[in-house]
Image 1 (cartoon, rainbow, N blue to C red):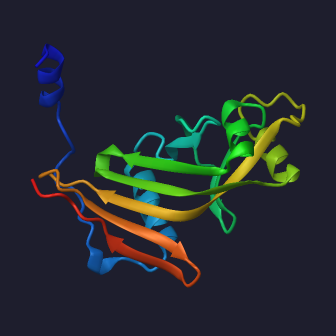
Image 2 (cartoon, rainbow, N blue to C red):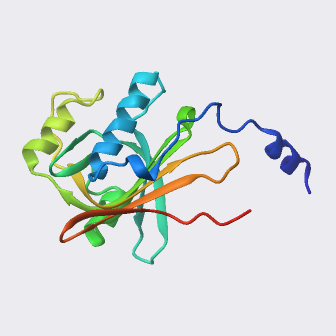
Image 3 (cartoon, helix red, strand yellow):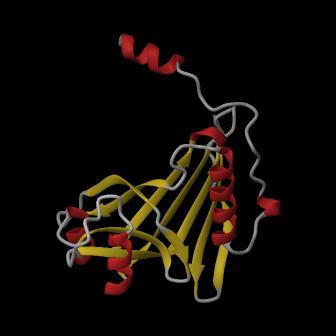
Length: 186
């Protein structure tokens, strides 16, 4: 064991007490649960509760992740934006599958949302561009707003004993189904 391992093991974990996620009290719609958790993170004063890790896949099959912010949530999906010619823009043009991972340390909560990203129209993209702090009054034809249409969610609520509660929602033709994800013993 290196000196670093000992330091890392001694770092504090999640604050106590942590919220509880009960499989008995889940909404049928995962968007409602996500919005509830996001609203709680916003109300808590957590810094950048709208920040998430955004993962795409390169042409050679290697996953690539970076931090973005979610811009909005509506019937189209979970909005984000980038330049079409950026790495993520080019990766999305080749393979539109992506994952968003939200983590709220203060409540020990994490949500993974996986789905397909679709480019929104130019009006939505340019409106988003105009709202950026770096906007100089010129349109940007390379700027693109996207919406991720969710097909899977995994909600994780941390527990002090590290046997975290995980609930997975999957979309099918009949709507959403959900079930606990098995946690290994030990």
